[in-house]
Length: 384
Image (cartoon, rainbow, N blue to C red; front, side, top):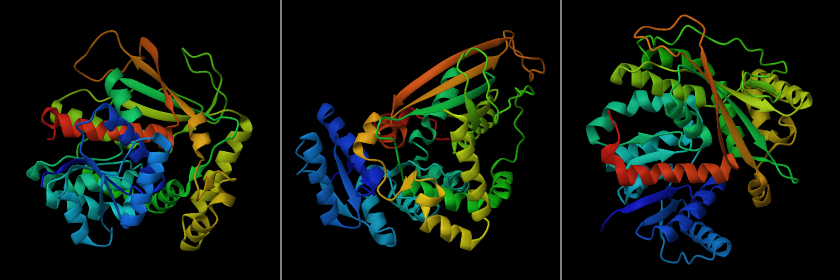
């Protein structure tokens, strides 16, 4: 029996359902795609297909459903043997991601996920890169909004120093964030102390970034050059900076390209929003330092997030009304040098990327685009 082109693992999860819906729509336009969905329960997988059929009007009776349990290595391997590319939507990845990647390697199946967890992503590279190269398998993490926009934006613009500013827009019904994102953040921050030794091993060479670093007061209202809007901004706490640095390290050490310094920021609409985020960040930092605090954060996410985090996640209406805008502010030099620039940049520009709800609608589109590219154009990708 021939392999499927794409297989969505974790299709019954909140984000997984959006990926299924997006692939169902895509398969109508590109009808040669052979795809399926996987999870613990066949009956729940069929319920998802029925749900997506009602939403889209697309008959999904022929879509293959595969039973696989994250705690059963044999079932994971059998699942991976049935596809060319596995789209893993089961998180938190630090808890559930490693056996799935090992199963992909065992079955020689390519892999993409939507992880925004730096420690997981960096550990995967350190632990599995050599085996993946040997097997000819591509293991590509962070293919959702974390961190496609940041990594592709920096690579596309390719100017010596780049800052990005993410702003989110919500509709009249507001917005909520699914508990899974919170859970990943809690576990990630509670193990943040493990990153330093990990990175020392992962990045043995020093990267010669430009010595220029723009000073920015991130806690105070600021107007950045080239953009008239006055915003409140804080450093973005996600995986963007980690992912971009790994790309720049690869480009420098493997391709002899000059690395790009990058700093992402998150915009806030008001001083009140800034204060709320600072309070949540402080509480988060304190509580993730002990097991009791971690338990409190996981038990009462709605309380500690000022109502933003829910187990239900955003409604469909909230997702459809939401959108994002990322502005890349770039700084460079007119004169190209072989060595690192030490003077102040003399070129500045602004590049803007916009899209739908980043967390679920946007992420499903991005990870699917990555999976299809990997399936259709793997021979053109630099896997070493």
